[in-house]
Image (cartoon, rainbow, N blue to C red; front, side):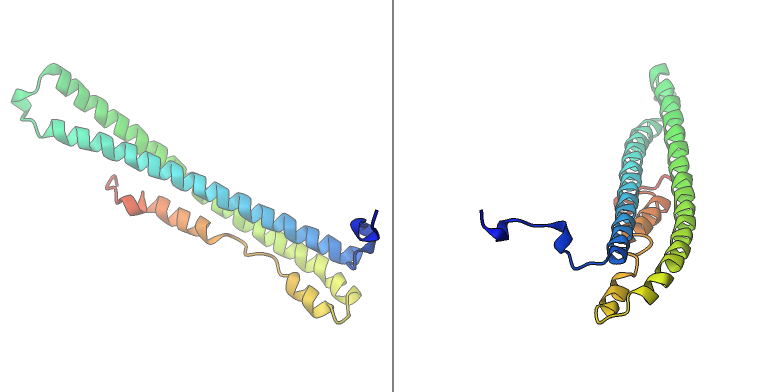
Length: 170
């Protein structure tokens, strides 16, 4: 067996403080990705709700276009049913928007707490790690962005209903 085939963790050039810092960065990145996934799920739910509402509205418009005197009992019933379904979907979407806002505020609070934690945690490391590699380590010490751009876009799309599909439920 060749000596190059054996890799030992003891051969790493990183100090324990640097490893700990790297682990914090990886955990932070994981949190950002989870948030991004959540924002994408909100967007998908919103788009589906808007599509469902638009389909129901189109059917309702077709029924409303029929003169009242020409409508049979079944058509009038269907019209009332469609109005109720649309109302429920709009309420569901309103809940989704409210939920997204609560999530955004919670994430802001988490970001503030994490920034405070990192500021406290990284102060002692600045004193410990003073070497030519320290400038590189300081650059690495910056946490990833607090929120992915997609989350901000997602909230904007949710508030604007479906965004690209331009539904007019509001």
